[in-house]
Length: 349
Image (cartoon, rainbow, N blue to C red; front, side):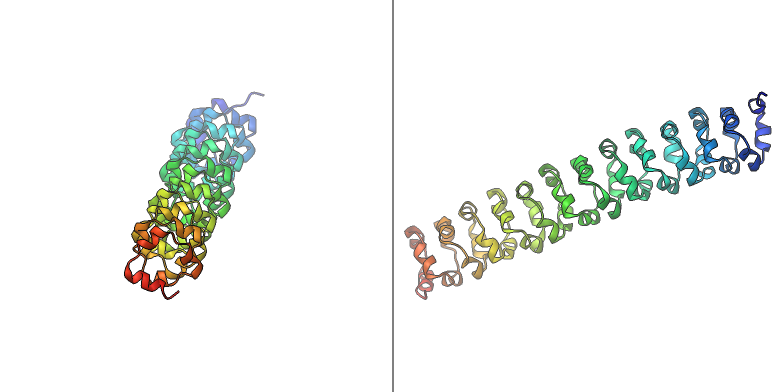
């Protein structure tokens, strides 16, 4: 027997009670017209079962207003939509129809099915509402579609949940948009997964937010990619936490840009790890700032690398801290550059 559903007027559709809507078969639901769909109340829509819902055509779904989607469908109904139905939602329905709770209820398969164009339109508040399982479900193309405001909206929990392949897919601009609290929340494994160009794109505020455990986990290649402003942003605590291999990896450009506070922050072990090339490029101000115990930790070949101009600015305390073996290793031109007071300090050896 042919169904009467297609012949129902809009007034008749409107007059149907929610329990009557719930009794419609999937075949009858599929026969509803776009005009029928457009006049259904939120109560009527909420009465549609999940099996019935899947029987709706994409045209019927697109006939719904943003209010009908946001206030009519429950989170359970939203979860029941097929990936094809999700893809059929209009921009307006997706952005202004789905509520934050509905976004948070999406199945991972539904999230993974979203197009990059759809992902790019999701509002920042809705991005922040996504569960970690949903964030992990985003593919690299979807992640790259996120704008700066969306990236900034990520919570620390969501950021920690990102897999290394997902982090590696982010552009430099996106990485620079990550909130400083989220940067501080990154695991060392996540941080190490960033390429040198990506790490070099981090802002000074982001660098300043790094925990000492994070900065000390950076590879020597990553350290070598940092700008002088980024190194300065680590602060003295972050700088002092760097491993000796990281200190030795600093380029001459980076090393000569270190301020005196950073030089003072060097530990004895870090000072002992300085390369002869780094020491040969030290400025007088940097050398003068080196703490006495650190200066005394320099090896003979390191002392030999110091230029005569820098040697002449050594304090008498620094000179006095030298061991007999260190003094014996000084070059003749270095000794000639010493002042009378420095020579007197040497005589205490």
